[in-house]
Amino acid sequence: MNHSRRSFLTTTTGLAAAALLLPHARAAQPQADSLPRKVEPKAMPAEIIHPAKPEDLFTISLAEWSLHRALQGNKMTNLDFPRIAKETFGIDAIEYVNSFFKTKAKDEAYLKDLKTRCSDFGVTNVLIMCDGEGALGDPDAAKRTQAVENHYKWVDAAAFLGCHSIRVNAQSKGSYDEQMNLAADGLRRLCEFADAKNINVIVENHGGLSSNGAWLAATIAKVAHKRAGILPDFGNYQNASDDKGVAKPYDRYTGVQENMQYAKGVSAKSHEFDADGNEVHTDYRKMMKIVLAAGYHGRVGVEYEGSKHSEDDGIKLTKALLEKVRAETFASMRHPTVPAPANDAKPKIVGS
Image (tube, rainbow, N blue to C red; front, side):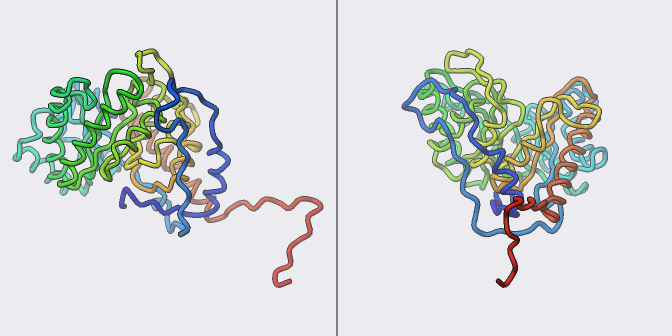
């Protein structure tokens, strides 16, 4: 499914989501002159279509970080990832983490092997999450340029593997606005390079000001490039801090709502599940209503990061919850509940 498709599926979902999309009271920004403090959701497209099957709402991918303990413990390698995703979890789309093949970005033989394995197992490569390549918003101009150029090899690798994006970080230092300007500069230059390879550059809310939903949305607006986007992560808004590094946890639902207008992917972070299979920290039904109300119908990545459950169980629980929410949403759209008329309301006679 085209990850950028923005057609909203039904007025039923829109009405259900509207109640959840009322502005959340929040005053998290320190300066009045910065770009928008409140990001309004985009208006719903006029064209309304109806989903033929639950998968039309969204499809599921697997983030490699979900298996970081197995990878770091040498129980599997990056080359095993496509097979394990498909055979163990029944997931046919994957999101890589560059640290698990850090020295292989320019290794053509390795990348060909990886691509062949994906083809053999019928697995689609979605994106590469890139860490450890420098701060794209570094105040030092030379270091910022170096960070931009350090990401080039991952753009090339992503293009070779057939991914649509690389995920990057918007690290910086300075005031609220200074960090925005610096990060936007680095991101824009990287987008200009990536555009020639048809690769998007998407920022995850990954700590610091990047986990402030309003700051991140305003930063991407300032980048002003079609390749720039966001990978909203359900669980990372609590890692927000202000420009002094002081922790300022951000409401996750507000953050996702603010960031969805630029989303080119979604990361369904999970940590712990109760006996009913619900994630303890995130209301997935509420969150997915926000996601769908933004007109997003692409891939939602399973990213289990907890310790209560094994990695395998955590992945399976996250996938099962997403599938359950998707099925419930699909069913409600096929058989919407119509509110009963008020007692004093006169029934409408068709044709009268």
